[in-house]
Image 1 (cartoon, rainbow, N blue to C red):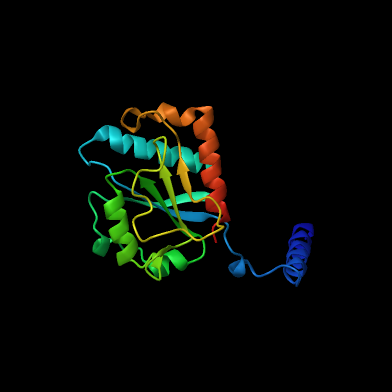
Image 2 (cartoon, rainbow, N blue to C red):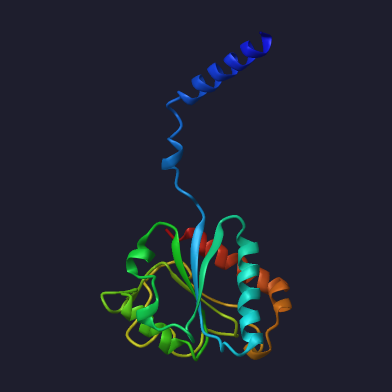
Length: 194
């Protein structure tokens, strides 16, 4: 009989704690996890290029735990603008962000997608939830594409790892102090996007 009384008291305690009005219903709580679409261009036959993208993705997720989730990786070598399922409606959803790995050979493809998916507001202003990263010393020439600009006074949205030669980058390069600093800056920028 004592065991049944314990169960009854436990149920009453749970019921009274569930009746508090200070806490919002669990279904209404917004997640802080950022869902990132990683766009990049890599030769599907070049294992080194693909491994570098995976290493970058892994290091970014580790730096951003638990706030960053790479929802999907899209290789621009295998996808064209019309077949990409993400569009402006997807980007405008809370916590959805696009991170583009910029390389000089990707800029033309990125521009086509930006325009086809209406990620360029009014035809000239790049959506605020689009960030870019370059593995080289600087942002590749041609970014942003002609006629497209970032909004004035916004936070930093374009990042560079400043590696000497993008062609010789290895997974270990993302372990350096400078790379960790850049990863942390990207995580902060992603977390600030809303």
